[in-house]
Length: 129
Image (tube, rainbow, N blue to C red; front, side, top):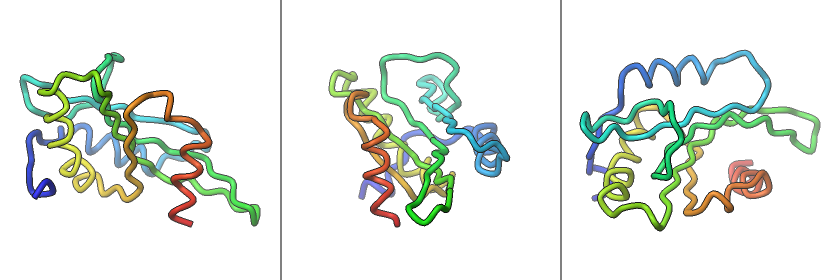
């Protein structure tokens, strides 16, 4: 049932930004951080860092044991425990629509920023190898 629930739509400018991000030529690690514009009920690119829930699309430079290098696109949903219930519902209710709209497959969730380490990400990505 939660897959069909849509609380917020995805800003078209964000969709275009992510398309360009997906096919960027740079080989460094990079991230797009998104947030919900409460008034517009729209997922947008975040320009300020706030202590709220966050959507992150992260291009990670992953070195494989056989010498290959790949750049998996990871979607990381952060919903801190101390987030207001209204915000938690807006983020949780918008996550699936965003993932589907942006065509993302590597989807992870964290509750605290302390969880989000390179070791944690490598462990999560190993499930896709």
